[in-house]
Length: 627
View (tube, rainbow, N blue to C red):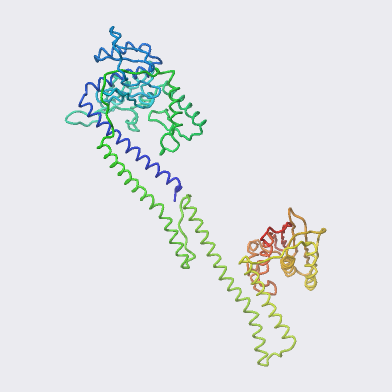
């Protein structure tokens, strides 16, 4: 329960996607390597020659803004390989032709062997005899083109100035000195187009020969102090072009409303634009935006598109029957790994749900004290907190129910015991059945009747069936009626009872219910106000309704009792005496009656200074179905 369930599912999806990408890369790499090795075995010399020609010309295009000056490169390559090499513009205009340089002018082949377009196709690097040529002309004269990444993404040495190359040489020499100072054999290789490379002997050997490692981006250990990161960092030119490309692509995608995200490349500081959902392929809009952005960003720095004419060669098909079988096997492996990951993660996810299910079953069996342990802040943790709160509420209400049954039994027992005692005494002739005894029995029966009526009101309120019959009434007049009804009781207790009203107070209320609620408060105020005290019933406008207040200067209520005053059978003095405390249901009923009018009731009190009960009733009519 420590992380978001949504994030866990997202992480699983990304893990599966990553596995699929890795598997696809492995298949493509393995299949391509096998095919290339087969082609090289058949015609290694010709393949190496074509690859070297394409690589040299592609490098030239990536390092020069135009094709001017390519004649020297074409002539040198023709002399070295003994092949005719021609470079033309897309419309057929010849830029360089080794045959014409020798005075001959034979027609060019009908189809080019490759298209050199660094802006749109990237830079396919051809270095060493084992590197396969990605674009060449088959016997059928069909043109083959390979879509690759931008040149500055493929090699950290692309676009280096002379000063940057000298700095790389210095860093490489510094790294070698550092390795040697630690007893490790190391050297610098400065040949080829990759820039200076630090070669370190790993200490092992195969067939008596030392094993070496070229320290490139990502191959050096994280804690390697000798290998400076600047040695494999992209050039300033590459960073500038990359920033321009990303800016153009982002602008285009935003204008088209296409979702995207930025992904870091293995060379530090370089980024590339990818779909927002990495599981989805590039949309047509994203392909157009990224291709145009790359082309526009590279245009000032690389040569324009050109066609390369060479001898014919057979292209190979990466997806052979064996390759398809390998693809199926790898896909099955990915599915098995994904299933295992999902089973492991699913068990961790289901464990708290099973705990909740068990706790719910225990509650069904009557164990209301059951709780579930909760950790974390995710969705399942919030569900656990909600369950514990629900269990706490159920346990509390169960306790209230049991306490209510006990209280009701107590309240019924006393008057019934009195009635039975008087009747038994009368039957035995101990007490005469005179008028006084009858009056006492009637009083006890009246207490029972009021208690039953109060319980019925509470039962109706709990069931949501406490009905009110609203009509337009004057709350000021209603307050005066309550005062008049309770004035005899106030005079008997030597308490002054008055009403303070300021004109009419029209509101849509149930006259009987509001009188009952206000009467309960006035009766309590008189009961707890000593002789010579004063009780004031007031009505005043407040917002969109009226406040009905009952203020006394009686004994007051302690602060610890205030939160429980409206609980049924609650008495602040805990005496259970109906002489001073009533049945303990009056305030609970009052609260239900007020809430049935969409109102509210509050109380403030201070010991020895009296209490103030405030009923707020809205003056607007009841919405349909609320009466």
